[in-house]
Length: 461
Image (cartoon, rainbow, N blue to C red; front, side, top):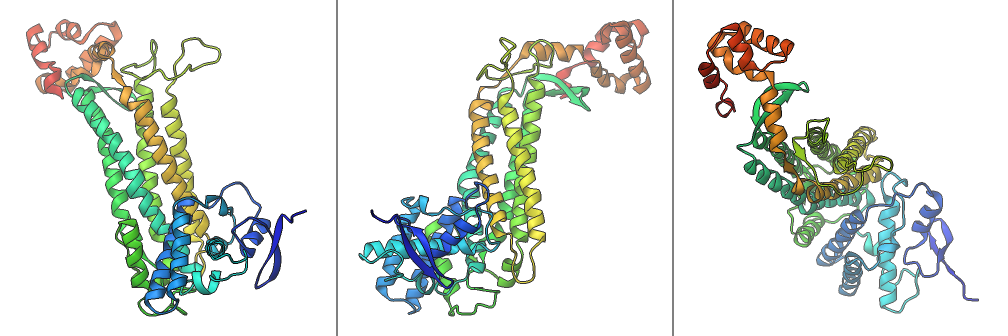
């Protein structure tokens, strides 16, 4: 029988590795020692680490530390990984070493073994590319892993999340313009207030999201400074002069984003305040989306016994027992995602505060929570836009009825008759179930014509 495993070795000795696996001994030890949950290191983080390995090979070659053959083999292996050809070779869980060392070595080992296959060498031979001496040259997990988190977070926000937000605000702006003249009753404290146009109400949602987007983009500035070259504790031991600049130049070219050398490696390796700040802005975005989804849920309540000023798309049956029921499921889905993101932010805050001395040992959790939040929000925002917001319709009939029935229109009379008389009118109308005009005439405070002139909702908005 053909053996389904091979032996690989590291500094701790030999260990069995699946025969066809491209990972090596340190990855296998992590699989065995950290069999916890199902949450894998995000593939976006794997790709960012791979970008670093590719950039490091170019820098090491330029600095005369590896030869042309090794540089080319590492680049070829990295290119295949970045093309998604080896995604299954990164099986490690989030719940591993807090520095991310085993994931860093997972990538180093895979690159080494891809190179072995390309040169007809034996898997696990570390020939012609050694995972530590060649792939990891001039680096430490302690500087590459946080740098990879920063690269992946900036990339995913700029290229995925921000475009999703912009698409949603574009639709909201269109709806706001369509409904700019549709006057309805405003509500504060969940009670009737003075009039507002439906367009104005929707414009608030759009501005909330635009503000959240702007704040999120601004918070990315500090993440563009990478701690590459700090190696183990920030001093740069075993890292040659100019390595940081050369490798970061290649990273910027590949990602088409601007990255720079950190002003202080010690800070970015010992703590992740800047990542926590970005996560805080992601939470604010989630809070805005939560509020908007709740507003839509309230305004679409009904159809007979609620507000029902908005009509939402009927995507699926809402009940297994009540025929014809339609629920605001997209609002609920988005709210659940936002709730999860808020929880992730709390965990990131604790993780950021819990680092010790020269290294924060919560890097995998921080990276996972931020990247998962970005992915969840990106998907949820797109779904919310396509399945709900695009198809929302106004309900002019109900809007008109609610507006005309509101007692708070009496506010427009205050400049003419004063607050106390206006309150008396409102109370009489409520107690006797008559409208404001009837109550005003009955009390003799204004003529019918004067009342009509004062209660002009177009002027009130």
